[in-house]
Amino acid sequence: QQRPARRAHRPRCDCRRVAGMRGHQAAAMAPPMRAPLQGGSAVSSLTRSFEHAGCLRPVAGAMNSPDIPRESPMAEDPADAFDRCSALLRGVPQMDVLVRFERSWSIQDALDQHAALAEQREVLVEIGRNRLRVRHTQLSFAELEVEDSLEVARKVTPIEAADAQKVLSVASRVRSTMRDLRLAARLKMMEEEMVNTNVDIADKEIEKSRLEMASMKEVIDDKALIVAADDTVPAPAVPCDTNGQPLAQKYHYCTNCKVGGHGQRFCQYFLERPDWRVYPSQKWFADEKGNEYYCPLGKKLVDFADESHFSRIAMYLKGRACLEEKTKVYELAPELMPFTYIIDKGTWRTVPPPPDEEVGNLPWFVKEADRNWGTSVHVCAKPSDCIGLTKPDAVYVVQQHVKDPLLMDDGRKCHIKFYVLLVGHEDGERWHLYTYQDGYLSISPNKWTPEDLSKDTQVTIIRSERITDWKPWPDAYPKCKAGVAKIIRKAVGDGKLEGRPGKRQFEIFSADFMVDTHGDVWFFEFNMSPVLKDPQDAPKVNDADMIRGALAIVAPYQGGSQGLWDFAGEYVRDPSSAPPSAVGGEAAGEAGVAGGISLGAC
Image (cartoon, rainbow, N blue to C red; front, side):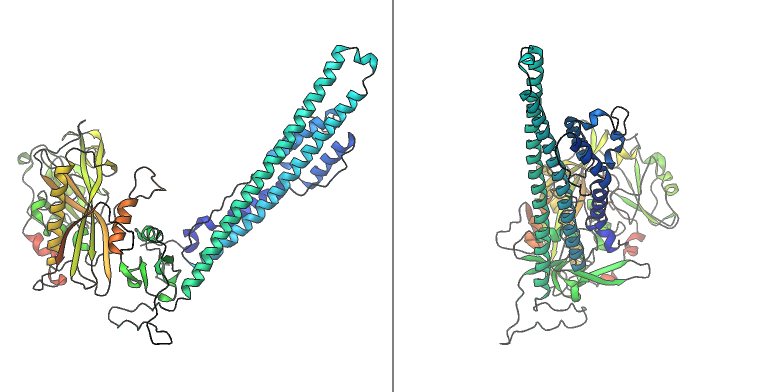
């Protein structure tokens, strides 16, 4: 598995974003030199000061426009200077908080983030200071303009006062300058509020980062944690206090080791609980390809990590290949699946399908055995076309479409995404199965006909809508539940799913089913890493309740609820069953079997 480097894994803390803000700020706004605001000469004097300091560079095009000559009389007008301040502000960087606090999973990431947030605050303060300086200058120009207009009004002679047009002109100028003064004052006040608000936000982000680093320091000082040991080595003794009593952990700890899958997601949900904390990760090793692997700091054993060796709760089932691999899953319950054939390296491993003229007009599906999520699925009209769609070095499963599929009211094809939680207990023997009473329909965008061999019509992949309002669901749910229970009972009883003594293990996965017009359900495959969505990704339709309920079963806590998870049974391995290594998939494949793989529905 390709693993990104640590720095690439956290673009949010890239200080270059803040450095870019600082560079733009420095180019746009150096501190302007103060000029005496007395008389008309002050305008050009202050403008020259701004130009000398580099403040007018962002609006150089406007200043060099032939419509506004640099030395024109209008440039000496306070009203023109007022407008130039507005133009100048448009070239000053905005008060944007680009870097927000996000949870860190290692000490170095936390330090990098805190440095970026602190630097961001410095840049924001600098930007805010310069924006307020321009607003203050703009207000000063407005005050000068009012003074000039009032001075003109005071100097009106009795003869000029008899001229109504002259009086209206002077009064209009006074009203206009007073309006500009009120506007400048209001804009300055709004600017102050905006600057203070954004600086406060930056301070809060820094405080979150500080608290995170303090929490990390607290957890790494917890002496109750022990170093993770290999399964073949006895676990180290739990440290004891001065009275000889075993030390108790201050909190429950989770670590994101960047394995992928749903590990980080499960950490996020565990951390919603008040007694869970992040235990920082460190680099574990790098392989010959340069891929980096991570573990909890000090290689400690924590309550949950996506590297099962370092976790008291493993998020992957031992022996999961019997549920995931397409050439093995049919061994568990072939009677639940459509008839299946296998192509291995360009030849039929099982008996070949019937001749083309004996199979009807339903399409055929060819799927690479180790691929999921609808990838590498080919559709053809006849079984004689199947081998031509395969690669010579791969294994494929082949299946004809289910007869009489139950379609949506508008004639589109659909299949059920049925969610399963399987928990293996610490004794290494007991397994608990749960099924979720809600789910999804995956619906084709096109009306289904057997003659249409397009992938969009025949291969349904994307979760389209919740299943609770689907009329056949109340009848289909118990049949899907019973089918999954039968498969898991067989996998556990035969010893294909293996326990982890001393550890709890679990996995949330989905099963694909299709319903036909006779009310029968057909099983196709398990997806061991199904799509799961969080509220921030999909606010209206997400899997948060399902995940929280599953984790409440796996790691119970006060106030937790299993939600819509339905207990489906407890299973124990048959002591007389052969060890997993003795149960070969190839022997069953020799005879030609009925097997269902995710083809017709997925």
